[in-house]
Image: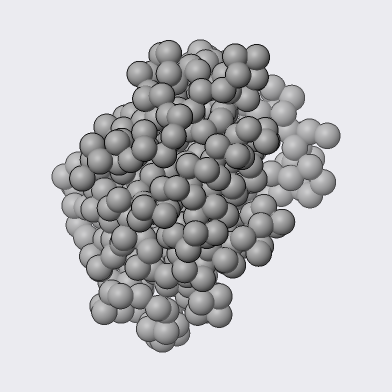
Length: 390
């Protein structure tokens, strides 16, 4: 990306990385690939972000696909179809401009403050992070705990979350969560209440506030901690991105504690990532009659989670470092279908090109999923495009 306007815009972006060309490439990859994209992760690891971006630009002009160790030509060709709708220097420039206006900083693996724990995600590690607030907060999570749980938390769940977060933050433990209603919000507020460090990993852009009612909370978090996103400014917090966001929460934290969760809670996805990464995992028990504690009881029974009843239990887990979905594979929604559905609306008709851009998939992949989803009755089509079935 040798566009002069892009270069000037990127040079204004706050980042501890002193290499504008490398920062441009990292910014571009953050926009090109969806979170967790393994092909982009392997390509960047093998070639470096700058050379990998040049390769993609060359391939887009019709240059023959080369042999890249760790990435098959078929994978590269398929991925190029996903990335090409977003391969636009003007779009990258606009992202840099928005980041400057919103006061966002960009962190990369080559610069300081990047948590080493992300290396455990291997090819699924984030390519860059957009930070609203204090970037140093992300670099200070060696002693940290993720407190996650139900959005529709009970008073019991919010009370336990606040108690744990407040006591842990008072003892210098960074509190990591997702900025949502319920357990997440209670944990962030309690940490702020004792002047502790807390960071929120969000599924959309760091310049957006989701949920909207947490605008004041996000502003408070950014004052001394950080609101962190893997997707560029303006990014929509889709279901797929929420699932991918959870791996960052689990990876960056020394331990993960599920405070309150139903049988199919998204918090179990975070717990699954923590277990897969070898991070200590805890769960807070609740009343056996409470549906909102069924997920925690499942973690205790089936996943050997540590029973958490007080802050000292969490400190033991943190010190050690210093899931699931009950549906069958046939019943579980395909990741590609989730991404296409996320890109559609109920009222607005959207074209094939628009859906591909929003989902980060190739035109062929989107077209195949649209056909299956229409057969399932999930979407409808017309001469104007596609939309969710009313």
